[in-house]
Amino acid sequence: YYNEYKSYLSTMASIKNLVRAINFSCIRHSAQRRKDSAQTPYINHPVGVMNILCEEGDVTDVDVLIGAVLHDTVEDTNTTIDEITEEFGTDIARIVSEVTDDKSLPKAERKRLQVVNASRKSRQAKLIKLADKLYNIRDLNRETPVGWTDERVHEYYVWASEVCSNLVGTNKPLEDAIKVVLESKNVKFPCDN
Image (tube, rainbow, N blue to C red; front, side, top):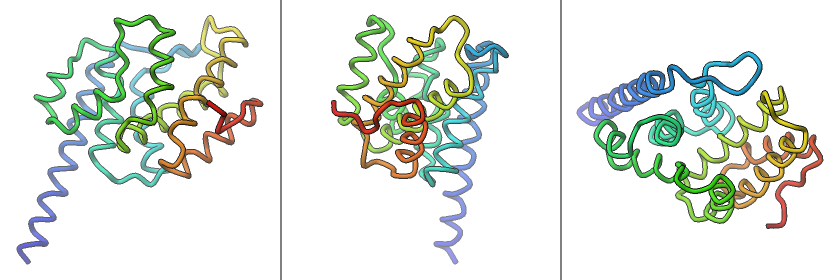
C-alpha cells in the first residue's frame, strides 16, 4: 500500500508541475501572436507541440512535456534559464536550454547550428525538436505566414528536413508524420546531410 501511495504522490506532483508550466508559458507568451493572417495566439504553438508529443508520439515523460510547453519561453520572451531552473529545476532547464537558439547569433548561423547540433541533443530535446518542426511545417502547409514568399516557405521545408534528418531514430510516428508533410511538398525526408 505504501508504494502505491508513493506512486500516487509522484503522479500528482508531476501533474501539478505540468499545469504550472502551462500557466507559466501562457503568462510569458500572453502578448505574442503567430505570423498567420488570423494572428493566432502564440501559446497555441507550445501547447500544440506538447499535444503532438502526447497524441502522436505517445510521449508520457512529463519532463519532456514540460520542456515542450516551455520550449520558446527563453528564446522568445524575457524569461531566463535561471528562472526556468528556479521554477522547474535543473532537469527541465537543461531540456529547455538544449532547444533554445542563441538569439545573439545571426539567424543563418542559428539555423545552421540547429542542423549540425540536432544529433547531439538528448533524447528529450530531440523529441521536442521533432514535434516543434512537425507543428511548424503543418502550420506552413495550412497557411503561408504574412510576408513570406513561396521561396521562403520552400526553404523552411528544406531546412526542417535537414534538422529532422539528424533526429531520425528518435520517434518513428513523429518522423513518419514529418515525412508525409515534407514529401507532399516535394522535399525529401530524410535528406542526405
